[in-house]
Image: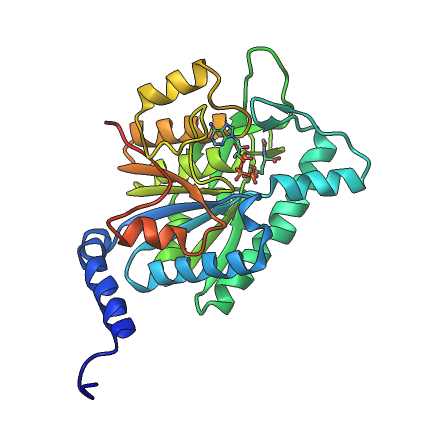
Length: 290
Ligand SMILES: Nc1ncnc2c1ncn2[C@@H]1O[C@H](COP(=O)(O)OP(=O)(O)O)[C@@H](O)[C@H]1O
Ligand SMILES: CC(=O)N[C@@H](CCC(=O)OP(=O)(O)O)C(=O)O
């Protein structure tokens, strides 16, 4: 073998980097809002990969903003407390005790865990909730048939804290808890929070990392591209249900609010986000205006 011939494995790596070049150039300086769902974060190895991806995005000049969920973890906490929990259209009915438990799990536990993972991957993260710096003001969600309690929907976002953290070379990590007009603590669906932030921060991309490959049709085939009109049809004919409803409503709101694309992808797949951003192949379901 020619001693000067490049190792094919190394050559393949170099070619991968070359393939990434136009994407690196296109996204330099852009903001990506990344929502890490509670179902996706179960596996510690996947969590490590997720943190590395976020740190890599920051290192190449993209401004990642992480919003996390924690629905299953809140559910487990409520169970140990002997508190029943119910959902309406994918939203947890939240009384005072449930709001306190949600804040404890989201802000106290998961938020700091993610800050730790990012730190171990070589980045610097600042963990906050929508309460900090008065960053996210919500109003009570008005559901046509049910009183959801302290479930909020963002109505005002002050971007200064996010900008300050980002400009300091750090990554903001946001727990979906916020304050209402009455000064009460509100529980916010993490997808809704991520979508509202993506709009307010003028994000180029919104990523929703979950535990399915993307949106599946009735035959369980992956739908790789969707528009808001197609999403409305999937909701009307019952193809999507549960947590997928607020997720896709968020995607519609985000792209109608100026976000270039929203992507639903499997956060348990190693480096799913990098594959989506930096390769021609892409991953998951991409939502665009059409
Ligand atoms: N058509 C669909 N395609 C994919 N997933 C769907 C669909 N309809 C409902 N779902 C459900 O939505 C879930 C994702 O929403 P959710 O459980 O709220 O995730 P997360 O905790 O990551 O926000 C999937 O695990 C799946 O059970
Ligand atoms: C109002 C509401 O439903 N809040 C959610 C907040 C966490 C969340 O959204 O977590 P996932 O993204 O992991 O589902 C909840 O209490 O479960």
